[in-house]
Length: 314
Length: 273
Image (cartoon, rainbow over all chains, first blue to last red; front, side, top):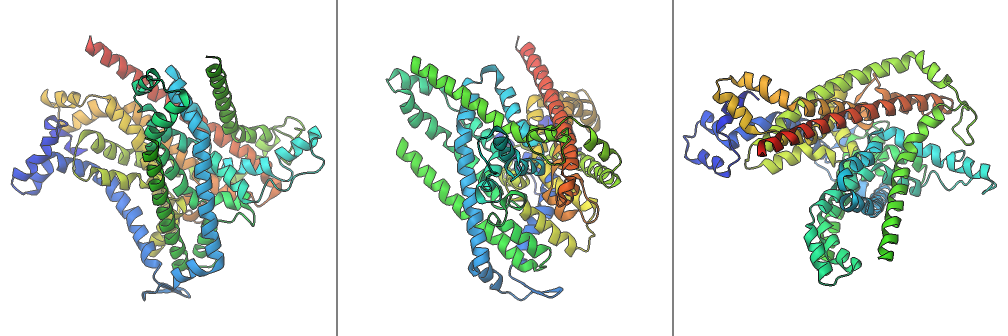
């Protein structure tokens, strides 16, 4: 912020960056270019991200190749942790289930959110901002509290069961509502709704409305217009929404713990145990790295699939 | 024509149901927090303040609330300062590598929180630091900065960089330009950012759970209480207060942001005429 003083000569002009090449290669001169000023201004938050995010993630990565030797860590390179993470049935099952849950949640969330995003973008009129605010408010109500609320809703003595009993629709409580993968998926889909709607809305906003009018004038019906214009053009938003939901949910800890029961345990619960009670950091690190790599590969595959699908539509 | 009218009503109905389901779990906690029964079930048994009354004398909860306040205020102020730097660089300069730099800073938004939490835990313990409120603040900064940036970027986009240039040309110092032009112009966004990041920190659980040591924040305190079924009504009361606080702060942030936007909008129209 100190370099405010030199702002006067900074106009958003791509050429400004080029001056750096002709100026004498001193540090002061380098800092006076637009590139220099840009880097200098962004450096505090960037440095913070390097020190407290990138650095620590690299440390975790290194840890995953080491061995826990009682209280100390043996730093000889080994792949044993990955072997355990990928071949021991318990971890393999947890990884697969986490992946299955996060893929299901992202698809369910995006499919349910799309019509809402479309409604706000195409029918919202003057109230688009208000609609977005209304939709994002529940998301701010606290992650833990929302999950707790679903536990209260779905529980054996929960709102749905006691409500249905009271109305005489069922004669004894349903025990299939809570403590299973479905409960985890419902809770997560609810928690991440706002995250899916925002990117979908942004991509729908960018669609040039005259394209749709042109298609209508040329005789395309609403379904055809949607399939050939809206959906392909909204694809970047759909992809962003899927990723933004899928990647964080694969490592969710609280939801499986509170509403997942024995059958809903996910990989984050196993990772937490390794960093807590079991105190085997390297194994926990290998589980964390495996999760990230697998979710990255699945996301990549999903993006390719959707892009291929878009090509078919056009 | 008729068919499209049906489709339109169907869509409006769907959106209504969708929004109702979004709000249902959030509004349910306050409803049960005023219910006299010790278990949250239907039908409701009667109105009562007793769960709130017992919170008033709960000193463990009070110290957790105090911890949350310290963490929230620190995280809000620091992340807004870092956010100002990032948002300024993103909106005022073009430079090579901007995309990567921005991506790295925004990354905590899309990473599973448990990954961030364990990485920080291992490094902080490795450096020999004791877990404390300080370590929670360090963690919260990571996830608060991206939100702060999104709020502040629109603030920077809303005001003309030529105003700063003019201030310089008229002989104001760099510090004077910052305190008399830039910060006042950005004030609505800064307040918005403080409110939003405070709310995020107040509600954040995973990082606080891993990094808080012996001083719990409110969500960590709630997590501990969940083991005792008898404490559930108190938790619901506390949760309702937190939800209300979050809603008030976010609505305030939204109103401030919008009023500033409107003012800028009319200013620009006047300029055009």
